[in-house]
Length: 444
Image 1 (cartoon, rainbow, N blue to C red):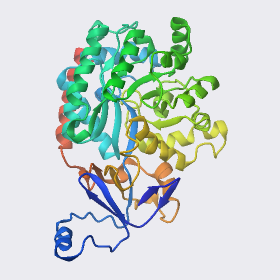
Image 2 (image 1 turned 30 degrees about the vertical axis):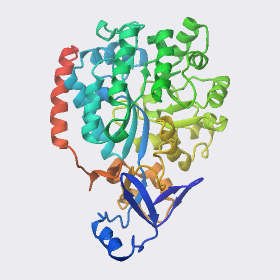
Image 3 (image 1 turned 90 degrees about the horizontal axis):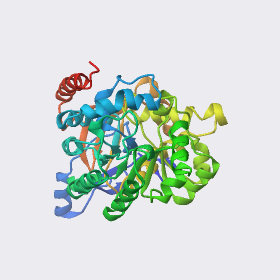
Image 4 (image 1 turned 90 degrees about the vertical axis):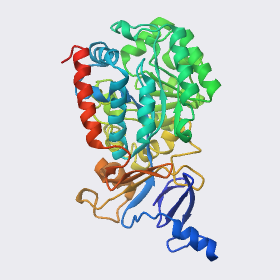
């Protein structure tokens, strides 16, 4: 088992789960209870043998777009601005309740089978209720927000245009229905897309709604140099300072990317305690740049990790993101720039902070939610055993090494197989919906 106690430590122990939480971490051979009552409790235990495996905290991705899973392979080799106007916004405008549902189901299946147990998700403008229904069914832990955009940026279809009041009213309605749903496994965040697509009043109101519901604010920031220059030109302020001025900062804010932040803005993010979400594959695929994660961490920033979406990454593999996050810093700053242990923290305790759940998930500890992975590290690419298991997880392990996945103590993946929903059904329905979506978006 891999524990996080001021650093990572491997120990041989049993994890006892009760009521969806970790009730005990015990040395092997210990039996719960004494006498008849204790023996009866022991007989009632359900035991999963993890001999030869590594039990680790469920991995967390703090920037995902489940609504874009059906767009996989449809928006390659474009920079962000063209990627949005020529592909993503037309496709999002073509979504229906059904296509959003199966897009979320497909993404949820990929995430769970690959060891991601919790996400911070930004949906599109419409049909967010369908994503919640899919997540309720498949069992993933998720903090989800309807995309808010009232400024109608250039290239956005009219179908994505909303008034400020209408956008906020729907977001609040979703919060009243879903915040804390499914035994608190599902929560709502407020998700303005990015500053160029949002008015100041909408950004301020999103921050106020988040405070009202005790929720997170989830947005993009400083992803490209074009975005940075646009915000400076239209607001007269640097982007991080502008977001702070409308209330989007601090522990309840998660800013995806932050590739183009200078030393002054980095210091501001650290002072605020704002969460930064690093998306290495997406930043490289869109040609946006490489976020200065070691400098952010050195300044004291809270950093997490995310795959972004299947339209700008083409997979939602947290192991690929961890490996890449470590490797891309080494040519810049040296081989020791971002070690494996620190990267694993981005995908566990860092992610928990970004979701506003640091007291609930992110590590194996008594009282925390039982979000756990069983890693079978016996394939050739992760042997020999006896080496640093954290190094194996970050540099060598793959999604296929995930044997079992538990969320709130419920088995969602057992023996590499999804439990709650048929993968065949998901793949069939997602393929059908993707074809219909391409046709409606005139990309067939």
